[in-house]
Image (tube, rainbow, N blue to C red; front, side, top):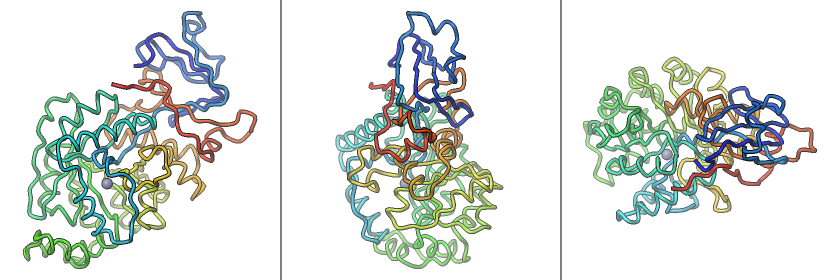
Length: 407
Ligand SMILES: [Zn+2]
């Protein structure tokens, strides 16, 4: 941790997604980097009033916990933002072509993703990583103290799940498996992944092209698979029942906990399946709009009791003008400005819901006593009576991590 002595942060306001709200507010942090107290100044423990305690005074800042980016591809950061022309299979082909080709290029791209995440106040990620890089990627990430999951990405319509190397090095379940999507990974891969005992994620119900392929085995994804020589006639049987992607996934969702990226398209029946199976959804609003998807049902999902968290997806889908392309705050701002979503709900999606989806401790990304203190400051006007978080979401200043951890 950056702080090596007890520190008292005195802020214009303090807020988390687990019930802390004080204006003005303080966060008392132990020398070891744990939250000792968060709330109104009157409740500060006496030990934190001593002269030996470091003081950080931030009267025009709202202090919140660090963010959880529940779905991202840090290894693609080096490609940078790119325009989208409306052809999703063509876009995927371009990404595959431009993926870092050498080991050195891969690491440069991955390190760029780590640095961008840390600067944006991200303290945990659900990161999708090339299968053979997953152990080293997670070790590099932990040096930056960006906790959470590395999901080993796997492909193949006729493939079975492979066990990632090195998972035994991590005390908790921090390495997972990500069959890429139903059009690029077949039912056997999803089934064997569900039985593996590893944490699981996939891209689901992302595009209308996927809906067509899953329901009937036809359309642009079928054409792409044929062009790439990856289609065999025996695969067709799994994609002829007219199912939605969520219905297609139902047996796998029932067999294990899944974190689904996107779910841009969901019927009422789909929402019931997601709720009954305890599935988590990582919504990536900027990426979803970049691809032209409309009317994401994240608020309906939350009303159904589904755990919805926020992700950035890759840097490719972010605006070139965004100073923090891998930041979660820009995702919150996007939803606040587009939908007028309740700010506290957005903070929960950006912190505690993501922590739950990634299997992190219950106090992770909160200011509960004993939680790891990774506070982030957001600018607001203390003279303005409006909620500090609503102000911070309407403004454009980037998030500032207060204890930045650089390896
Ligand atoms: Zn993705």
